[in-house]
Length: 119
Image (cartoon, rainbow, N blue to C red; front, side):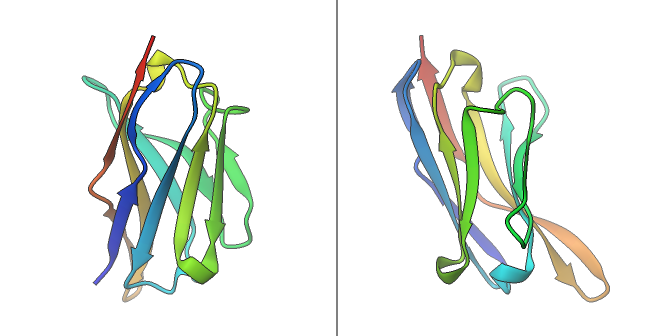
């Protein structure tokens, strides 16, 4: 079965940095695009960064230039490097994969990791 396990969240001061990790199992990792979402209190979960199987990346405007998504296929792990953190980056961060199940693709989520940025 597909499992995604995030780590690396925590409390950081504004302007600081954190690196999130998401270890995947139950999928052929190198064949799947991966994404990072976040959900702030009272807001919907939103995609902030994604990486394709070939390593192409896309970012939400709110994090562009500050966050970097990367992947290590040998470790079946996707990372989110977050720099110049702002209070508005406070949220629960989730790793996502839309993994194949038969002829369809289904979304799978990690348990989430809390990032709190103090101003």
